[in-house]
Amino acid sequence: MQPSRIVSQRWAALGWVAGSAMLLVFLSVPAPAQQKLEQVAQQSAEAWLALTDSGTYGESWQQSASLFKAAVTHPQWAAAMRASREPLGRVVSRKLLSAAYTKSLPGAPDGEYVVIQYETRFEHKQSAVETVTPMLDKDGKWRVSGYFIK
Image (cartoon, rainbow, N blue to C red; front, side, top):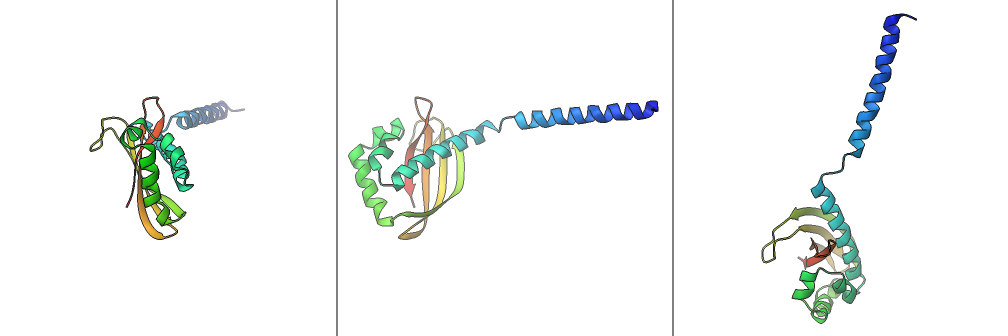
């Protein structure tokens, strides 16, 4: 075998190994921290919304952030949901519009929040925007601290 061909084969093999190593490094790099926080907060929000959608307002209150529970009592929350959500009917569709991480919100203490907006279609309301705001609670878990329908 010609020496130049051996060198070429070795370089090709090294190139494959280096390329594979680079691919592994690329695949093992974690997603940006902020994006991961937004995704975890969104999962929490969607689990909470499922409780609210099913009419289990007591459970949704229990699963809310401590800040939320300090501002609204369980009976107040249930009454507010019966008055605002039940006339809308069941959720027909819900599509994520945005999720934005922030450390500051008007009227709320500094902390870690993700403001999430969904375009939602209800049985009796064709177009609404739901804003759900999970926060990183005292125990390190994301829990909903605010909810608004427009």
